[in-house]
Image (tube, rainbow, N blue to C red; front, side, top):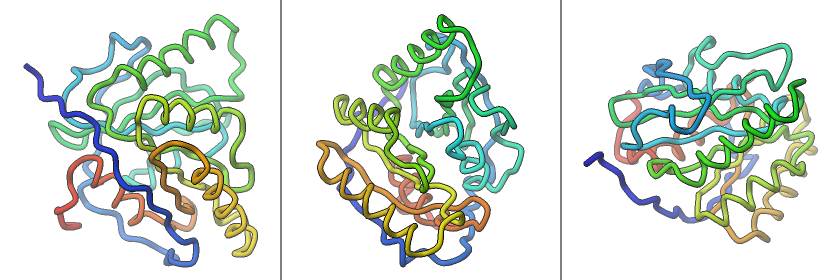
Length: 229
């Protein structure tokens, strides 16, 4: 039997926007991430075993850049000048039992309605049925948080008991006051919802918030007691 472990519900935690140093060191464990495979359909996913953390977000929320920053690998998750082009579920292997998963971006892609329905259906099936999925990193542009898709994802995650950690991306685009205001707005919305949610500010450009995000990933991937080496 493949190794599968039930999802654990972490305590809700909120990271203060005032506690983020300007730069952060990348845990060497994440530098070993490598592309494993892509799946156009749910049944093409790798064996449902071990631990996975998925990344989701609107197509212009900086999802690929965040993955690349967290793994200190610029070309790991492909970025595109046309947001929304990625329609596959992309798997990146950290070790034999741990993977990061780049889910299709939602938003801008100019594709047919039928293709978009298939793509959204695969996303929903993955989130609901993938037993080794331990948590979801949800990207929101700090300047434009809580769009319809973001709220839909949060409600869906709460419904299926999936923990979510929100990265308010592109924090470098706002001054400290507006960034803090956006943080507290989203924090308040999360507290009002029935789910296991946490939140932080994040900037790929300035490399802010990497260690905080790694702490969440380590917990979900069961690396809490590992040192950053």
